[in-house]
Image (cartoon, rainbow, N blue to C red; front, side, top):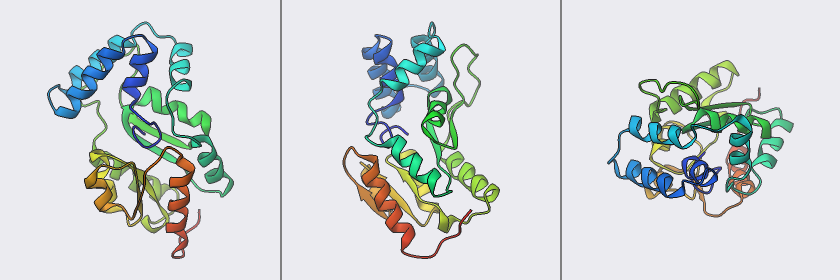
Length: 206
């Protein structure tokens, strides 16, 4: 989700909304540098959101800097009878709101406002592969029928496993593994690349 559906990161968007942008930028940069533990990162984020109501979280979500056309993409996927799944390391409470825009399923790190933080809350890169495999099995699809979209190191395992993947403003490592890449701010354009990849060969249908 971060960098693929969002132009930035959910942490930054939440921190900006709650007036603690500097704190959010600090923990985000430290996480990327590997100088803060996952647990410490989430604890600080939960502190930022500690007094938030569901309405506050809705407002932070709606006001975030999304790529253009996210809801349009989900609408088109649904109209085709296909499945849109979002798998992200961002908090589950933030990703879950994408279901309102048309995502069928969302999976995020096990982080919820107002609930104790469990050990191992961060959704791992390996989990992205397992969640995708489980979803394909449930929907009676093969990997050939799936297109992944991603941008960062947490997507590398998924991109290495799936035969079709689109890098969206990708890191160099992701771009190298991707079937095709998109640089820009309109998700509909990245999605059109994914549709072309699917059209190259016959794929399963739900």
